[in-house]
Length: 270
Figure: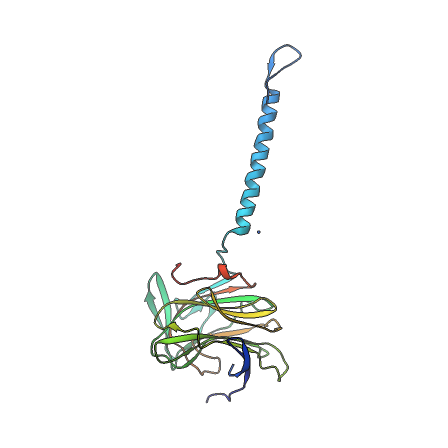
């Protein structure tokens, strides 16, 4: 049975409301030609060159695009993801996609649960999901649900208009105060075509929560959130088995920091 609707503070295109959710040669004393000066000069030049190369390398490393995440989950099987056992609900299937595999969900009965939250204990985080929503999926699809043992949670969701379009919905609630309904980020004007691959992301820097599609910010809002503790993640469905996702999900990346906009993943770069 579907859980009762609880209103949650929502940033809708910037407006709060309520909704569901870095040498020279010398002579020695015997009159012979000596190369000590030349050798020392060459050594000094070598040291200077090495120092310059190290500085250049350090500068390059400081400015190079981030090419790693703290943990990456490849959704290519139904037994183990990211080294964690998988609990399966319904009959999701592993399907072949260009360059690899993904898990397909039917939008009505399919989901998986993973008993881990890789960003637990970190106040700042970025979560990126590579997914492709089906053309005929439900209107509300809460396909990525992070929740700790105290009930604090993060959700990445989509809404569809049944006209071939979808838009992103991001949510976080970590306060224990029952009057705090969390923060929802949703903008129905940011519509994307269904049936394609997208990287969606939810990022919190300690002050602002923001969501993204292929590296482009959809919306953000200010809120002070606590770090989540240990818990589990459901993929393809909300953890109380409502709001099912129809489509394919291939990969999830977890960062224990708020990574810059230009380091976010974009579909088509793979």
